[in-house]
Amino acid sequence: MSDIYDIIIIGGGPAGLTAGIYSARARMKTLLLEKMMCGGQVLTADLIENFPGFPSGTKGPELADLMLKQAEAVGLEISTCDVKKITLKKSEKDPFIIETAEGDIFKSLSIIISTGANWNALGVPGEDRLRGRGVSYCATCDGPLFRNKDIAVVGGGDTALGDAIFLTRFANKVTVIHRRDKLRAARIIQERALMNKKIELCLKSVVTEIIGNIRVERIKVKNVATNEEKTIKADGVFVLIGLSPNSGIFKGLLDLDEKGYIRSGEDMSTSVNGIFACGDVRKKPLRQIVTAAGEGATAAVSAEQYVERLKGTAYE
Ligand SMILES: Cc1cc2nc3c(=O)[nH]c(=O)nc-3n(C[C@H](O)[C@H](O)[C@H](O)COP(=O)(O)OP(=O)(O)OC[C@H]3O[C@@H](n4cnc5c(N)ncnc54)[C@H](O)[C@@H]3O)c2cc1C
Image (tube, rainbow, N blue to C red; front, side, top):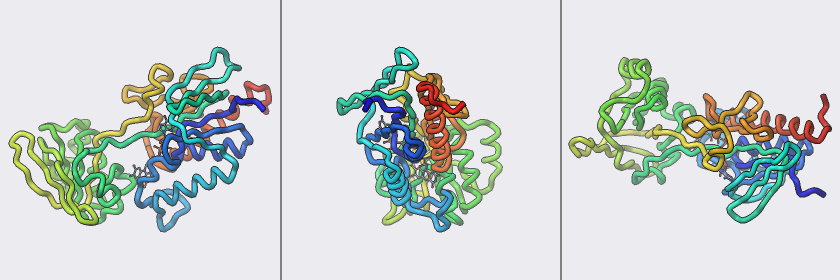
């Protein structure tokens, strides 16, 4: 049997696992490489209320486990590997070469990239301990859990201000904390935020500590101009200071946008024939489990069609 895979998937979050379920069911010789535990960001989500099929919501690790079990049940081969390098094909019929930090070398006719993204953290005391217990990085995901509560939003860009406005649908009060004396968000978003009576601005300030016993109760904020520190009551802290795509190893190989997100088409094809991208690592408007899964399915079907065309077995 050839040691060349039809499809190698890099990253085992919802995008990669869904791509794996579709590829394995299509009887493609598929391998998924995940550097940590399968599940990706979902493993760190406390309660997920917006993934269809779970009317009472579900815990992130439970959903991740179900996705993994389903992938294994349809025969997906999974290996724990940290991918470090991809070498492009010499000619269309040749395989891509994938090298890992562990020293493995794999060959594949096509690649699906689903390496996801990481939310930038504040790095202050209390943040890690209270993650999922009031500390959130996603307003769309967790906003409805803060009905009639006091919330702090950290950040001054479009996402922070846009999400602060969105959060006023649920919250009693939203305090926006930004380290500069001016906000960075587009003027129109700033105007909307300033007109909103539930939003209060706390400029030239940084969060120095997140405090709470079991859940977030308050935060310490320092004015960077005066060094004065004060404590603000907050039931939730939304840290919205940016998301970083896990795309460093694809720099110079694929077309990335200015923030490092992979540019890909409707069929998930990238600037290199035979390489597809799905989930949070691609440039797109909504980063959620349901969109990651949908794109994983599309990437798998596109990769399958690409491989079958290469092998001359495509159903045209
Ligand atoms: C705390 C939290 C709560 C959230 N709540 C919700 C919610 O309620 N609803 C919702 O829809 N969305 C929620 N999200 C967002 C959702 O989890 C993401 O949109 C989704 O997980 C993206 O899936 P993905 O597969 O693209 O990437 P990820 O989930 O980021 O998975 C990428 C995987 O790739 C692996 N990887 C990266 N680089 C390599 C490499 N070089 N080699 C091998 N493996 C690699 C990573 O280890 C990771 O497992 C939440 C996110 C967080 C952080």
